[in-house]
Length: 277
Ligand SMILES: NC(=O)c1ccc[n+]([C@@H]2O[C@H](COP(=O)([O-])OP(=O)(O)OC[C@H]3O[C@@H](n4cnc5c(N)ncnc54)[C@H](OP(=O)(O)O)[C@@H]3O)[C@@H](O)[C@H]2O)c1
Image (cartoon, rainbow, N blue to C red; front, side, top):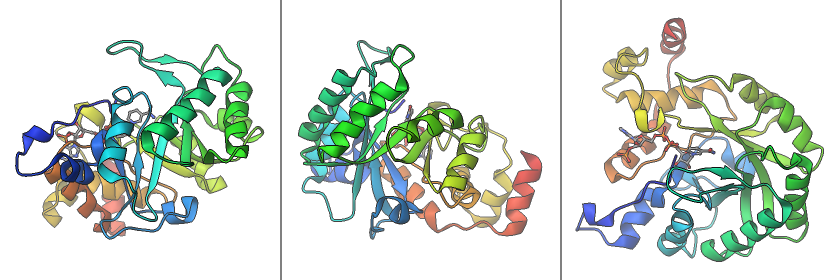
């Protein structure tokens, strides 16, 4: 999970603001993909036009750092946050989809992010103790009040997406997905069919990383690229609605990941990778 703390002291030559501005404050950077079409975000010079965070990351710290580093936000940069999954203690993740909690969570995120309206607010998870219609109804109310522009979902099945869309328009889904973990393939296919953004979390294997020997290695060697870069290129190639959000606390990794947006796999490379997965 991306509640990693960012330590600007790792590099004494950069200030906290420049460090965070570059490494995106423990959130994840979306590589320029179809997000312009989906969220109306303009592609930036860096190739990053969305930062994903959540009130639970830190908790609260990630949103505070993003505002400290980047506010006032550059035009066209989408800050996407999430609510509905709380952190009562270390390594504890407890859903809370009660309407009152979610409405308050939106207000608190607005304050921490110094925004009047959140461009993309995602329900972090569905709370099994609360009917999802009630949770999403609260987000619809916040949208009607002008506090949220778009609503997204996270950790949901295609059936849940269909149900959610009966309550409030949904623009995106954030589920775990990478070349080695395609459990949510059906959710991706649904998003493709319905032109919803699909934001794969753990796009490069998360904290564990990808397996040491994997089908991306040959393409990486041939192109003098890293396996991580090919993993990101593979995601971008996989679907036009794919919006990868790789997380990093390192400037070198951030630059490497951004450069991957320019790497296009050839049909032969794609086929070779698919054959081995
Ligand atoms: N919706 C959800 O439930 C949920 C759950 C988890 C995550 N997320 C979101 O998804 C984002 C990404 O997921 P994630 O952070 O779990 O996994 P990830 O992006 O697949 O992997 C992050 C890990 O990869 C390393 N890394 C990044 N770039 C690298 C590079 N170029 N070379 C080598 N290692 C590299 C990072 O270490 P370094 O810091 O050393 O670079 C970190 O350990 C998060 O930031 C968060 O916004 C959402």
